[in-house]
Length: 143
Image 1 (cartoon, rainbow, N blue to C red):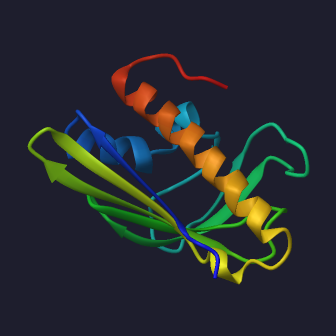
Image 2 (image 1 turned 90 degrees about the vertical axis):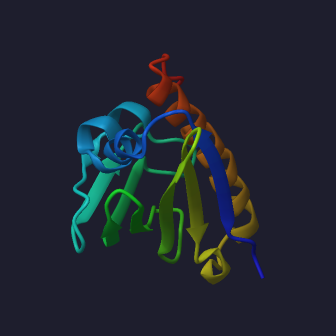
């Protein structure tokens, strides 16, 4: 069975600021990708960036669950994936700020190039979350 991905970041920012950064279209365009996004259950979104290798640069999904300011979950599908995966972001208030937990699941359903894609997603999320921390801290974002 393929391992799902899980990342944790402790941010020195209040939970409501972190929530705004993960749930508002304008903020997401700054640290992740531009596109249409609304944190409303059932909303079908599309984010688009520059294509890379076999990826056409698009992420399509549907918002599954929203519980401000603690939980955002959505489907995640690209042209490289042969099955919808699920991204769940959980925010927990801490005395030092906010703990962000990002889980990318349903990887065990992938069939085509699965091991490569899971590793590629791992590298991608590591880069994206580093940019998220930079965005929250007011630093410049890396391409």
